[in-house]
Length: 183
Image (cartoon, one colour):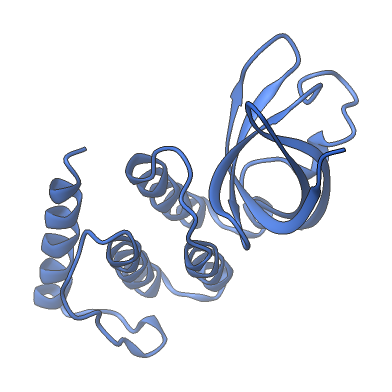
């Protein structure tokens, strides 16, 4: 019998696999970024479907098999998609896209989960300018965690709006980090 792992997770992406199976990309509290197969998720009335929508925070039950992770259970904790504005969802989507672009396979860094979760939780309470700052700072911190930026991380109080020259410097560092990844 295989061991079951229960952990908090954020659903980043869903990709259809077979007639009813789906590959779900999760950012987990214990294992970092991973991809797990969810059988029957595309069937009408699937019991896990409500908890595995994009930008859902849930508690998942995972089983490690010889061919990778498999989802055996999910319990919805919070649906961030419904709490975010359209602009907030676009910002969360860009950060998600950055993670998916830079992390291939599995990334066993639980700090990514904490960083992403705090970013998405903060978005609904921030103004448009503060959201822009939060997005830039989060992208730079992700690059630093992945070893693609060696500079000093900025300490910004409560995502205060950045002056144009500071924002330009941050975006330049982000672009250099993405370029350094070779992707």
